[in-house]
Image 1 (cartoon, rainbow, N blue to C red):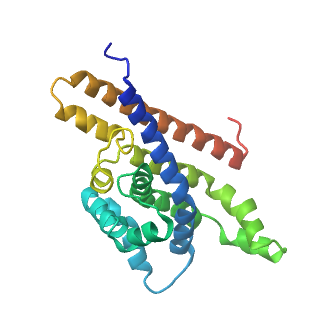
Image 2: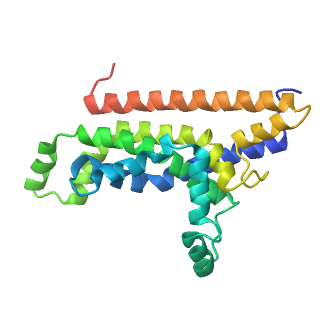
Length: 234
């Protein structure tokens, strides 16, 4: 049947979710740290850091994938060290695809977090510190609740970006069924195969359904957080 997913399609679907979820979770602490630096600190080279963070948004995804291959490939400076010291090989693995997902979604995550951090009243933080709250307590009780809408929005934007990533993924980890073939790559393979139109229809429908669910979840979570912060039950 046209709407009955094959085993290959289910594998691509589940792999896409795993890669996107892993990439977002791995990038969260780094995203928060970079967003805080850009929002609250002044230091030499700040504009360079800002530009580097947003670089994946403006350069072709294939170029980003190629740079990751040069850096993290088995012959790259970082990739060779990881392979020699820990036996870790990222190229042509789903873990490498997760790194691609993290890199491509990172600018969206940082942007949303930065805007939320900039909106925090510095007086609240200073008052809490004056009353004896430790930095960790300030972070948990003041900062994180106030930036939670931006955190959720940024995470879901990064997740959506990861689900749709194609160019950087195929350049860095290839298109290996069951290992690195995510939904976009499976759709690409279907388009290259004669008589695979039905598979293409199913993958497109599945991609659209995922996008709708992600957007709906973002809106629902955002409304819930805003109601809790404002005390509005309407």
